[in-house]
Length: 185
Image 1 (cartoon, rainbow, N blue to C red):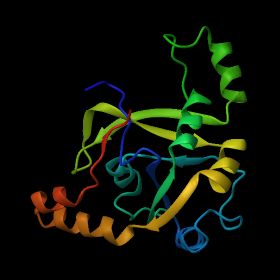
Image 2 (cartoon, rainbow, N blue to C red):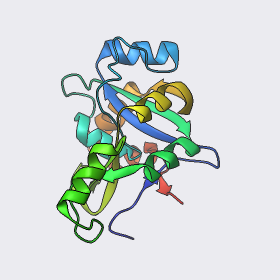
Image 3 (cartoon, rainbow, N blue to C red):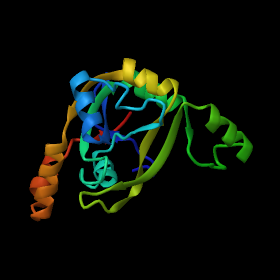
């Protein structure tokens, strides 16, 4: 497996990404099937994650403050791919960027930031490959909330069910409930 891998639940037209929010934002998003301001602040960068277990790591299985609600957001692949094409790494990489100044300029102009963080196993331990986190700002957030979103589901109880099985050392049962993510092509 490649060091940097996009793994996700997807089909020909859509991909599922995850976000964690407080109750007010999550309820508004599910009720409206998009993010409405307020309580969502579209002026801020919003991070989407196609890896379920990385989202569980980031939210502490939906226990961290303001991350108690996990949303599965089905978006258009065309939007996801636009985000990738219009992105800049959130950190300087001399194998990609000509210079520090070039990277800084691209970062300021880009509506999308990319981070590659260690993927997690079911115990939230790091694996030897990285998963993508995508930060949307400006025009990217606008397109996300007005065009890319197909549906939004609150999957918090599902996440807690898996976590409970892990806590009870029922790892096989918990593993069977995980989303069937595959390498994204």
